[in-house]
Length: 406
Image (cartoon, rainbow, N blue to C red; front, side, top):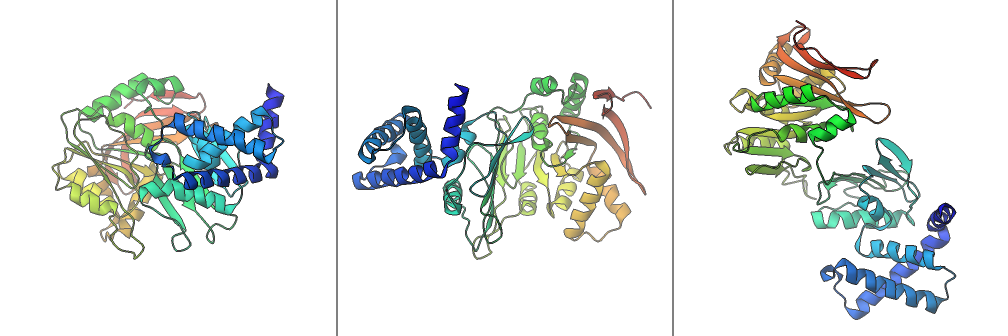
């Protein structure tokens, strides 16, 4: 069975197969147009039956030298080209795949359990990649072309999508998809993976219920949004929550949630709605808590002001590699937002707004860990004054409970 699988993979990656798939795809499109078929109203079973029937006829008519297994592969791939996302549809459907990265037509990588692997799929050429990108973006009302060569978007399930095409991308169109889990990680999942401990979760749950303002910080792919989702599950059901994100990823299972998403400018460079606009508007919507998916721009000042003026229990995430780095990042963003006060004044505002910092990180092996949980006591010339509650010891690979140690 294994040699056959390897042989099939080599067949799918060959130029001969790519040309065969392209020709059969054109044949399917021709059949759809000639018959005036509306595939949008067909279920998956009917579509599979149509593609399989056309595949059998096409193989006979063209006298193609393909066996039964190769015919089945071609039919499945052609179906994905017709109504899915082409070569990467099987990767999108695979729950074990966390990230999909397309570096031009010939190179596709996937991340599984924190590690990157080469995927046994490829595109025909640059135009093939761009066609799949356009299919992803079309239902979202977004586009990518030479005038707008970069785009951020999300799939209906919340998965993040980033695409960048020539002339900006020198080696061909690039597509990145960070998939969203169908089921959000639970506290039990976190414990099973060793990301945190039960005493830590109990402590954080108590702080969330006490309406502590909290920030989750970490690097790329460290699990900030995942952990924020976990924390949000402990917000009482009778509280009104407003979420603000650039791409909606948070999934809050509450009865009173208002989800807001920023909007980029149109082709004329107008009608943009920034995260800062949404934070300001959220203050007028009678929120009990405001959750900003990630602070990355001039919304930082309005978010801190909201936390300082009665919206206790608010949460956010920040891209930073440590607590000191987080403070410097906040100062930098505040400067971009036009803050003209002194460094000590801004640090005082941060220490008043935030009472808890949670640092998460992705380890070299791909595992994700809560590196530290710290209470914010105030600020001084050296930075924030913190009282560590939990810390991950890299040497012993164990979480240490620091409460009660002074």
